[in-house]
Image 1 (tube, rainbow, N blue to C red):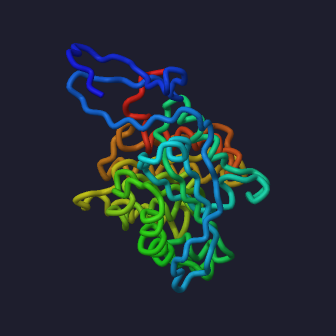
Image 2: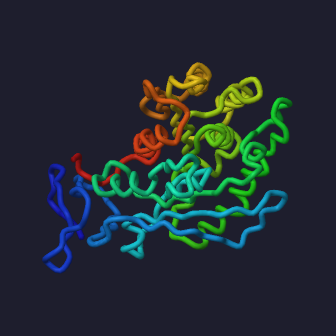
Length: 307
């Protein structure tokens, strides 16, 4: 459709067969702008399925993968969407599988974000952990924790085996600016490290309560390398709580955020650092902070009017 003669922005919304408005907020049309719109009218929630792709795990153990497909993807077969790769897939969608019985409510967060327009819709690939979680999620060998330090092999699994299959199977936007790597604790550690060493694949990084303490804060020195990269990660989200036995490593996480700032990231633009008062190192609090993390990394629906 073409809206001609516009001198100011207007709000609009598609209607199906003269009876059903598209779900979500109004769209916004700016004079002279071209916008690709993929509305959905009926589907109110995304789908989560266990997916067992035929990838080669190499030296690592095989694992389950869960995939969330958002409402627009389910209903509109032309829609291509960003992808968020998340660690600890067991904890993301189902309390019955999650550690401690507390899931991250990833699907609920994205379904609500789609309805309000606050979060751009995205496919989520939840990669299950294994008995070798510590070894796979750590980028360096720490003599106090063995075995450890095979994080690069895990990242290779994601980038050379799993991602090509995801892009071949689902309607994705495969570019780095539409590909996020998100995790918590050791998953936050390997996400931050992955952004430093795989910036051509992952342009968006979310590190919730990252284990910055690992190997005498090895990660801080790695983040400093970002300043020398011609095309570093585009956006970084870092957070923690400040309570519990470890105070959620709040001091080291503050240093991590400072390291990103020193490398050139700007708070509120390319960096978001959050401390949740009273929060401890737990899935309960990661679920609470996840919507804000995804809203920053993915942004709102680009053509949506403010609610």
